[in-house]
Length: 193
Image (cartoon, rainbow, N blue to C red; front, top):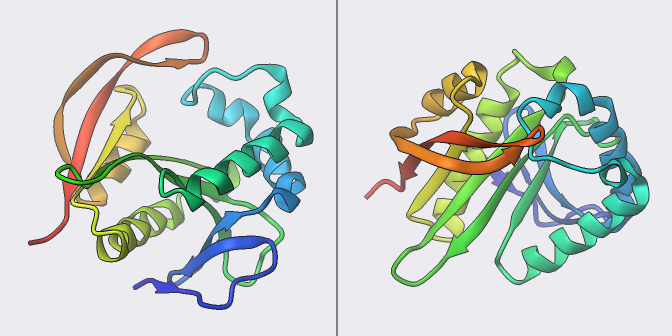
């Protein structure tokens, strides 16, 4: 079960906790720890992540990404949640993001996530996705969350199914991954009635 934290730390805009994790929208002052996470996992994420240039892996660029994240979060267009183990605030172990928000008659968004290579296999991402999705549906009244996954990313496909998502079909040439346009498998989860 998740809990929204009323008294966030000075470097957070928002925080929630699950049984084992703290998920936070981070301010620019956290660029060092987010850069360390990305650099540490660069090779591990490369096969599954959108194409990035060299500057992406610098603290200067990550400071700008965090500024953008905070602006978009404040306008209700992005919920970028960095993942920490409870009691270990200095080390990012993953990220789950909600984006492409559509309000009004749609009340939907998209989901993306990635995990530290050394933290896989412990159920952390399943916990983060399940509980943060519940929070979005409860608090923001989101009706539909979509996820798009590379067909050969077996671990991510298994994770999204464990989280209760339903297969919908294929998105052709959906995202530029590791230097080329790739098809993705589309999944969705609806809020309970």
